[in-house]
Length: 124
Ligand SMILES: C[S@@+](CC[C@H](N)C(=O)[O-])C[C@H]1O[C@@H](n2cnc3c(N)ncnc32)[C@H](O)[C@@H]1O
Image (cartoon, rainbow, N blue to C red; front, side, top):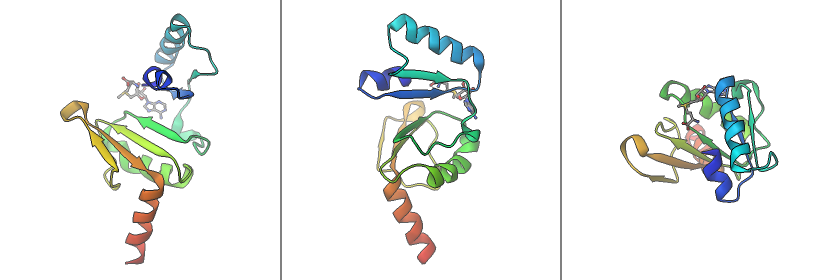
């Protein structure tokens, strides 16, 4: 996902808690000639990281964590952030768009829309 995003012109940070996979991604970036300033891979637990400096996030995780992750992102991401969920959607969020189907489905969410909808729900 990180490599695909760099091709689209994004500057990316990949979080991976498994050090072997982090090492593999770093070697692959070097082999592809992608500079650290364009794609960096950090061996870091994103639950213990404040994500507020990121404008866009793409996640491919397990269904059981999506609800809790949604709450963390609602607290931390800027209003203009866009979040892409691969394979498993956020159960409480309304997507702006979706593409693909089955195992290849992905959902896009805009933080400002998510926040407006959750304010609306609280006010009712
Ligand atoms: C479904 S796999 C996706 C792997 C890869 N990104 C891909 O697109 O094929 C989820 C990955 O997230 C990593 N992961 C799970 N929890 C994490 C956490 N708290 N911080 C960083 N990485 C985590 C796992 O080690 C695993 O490699």
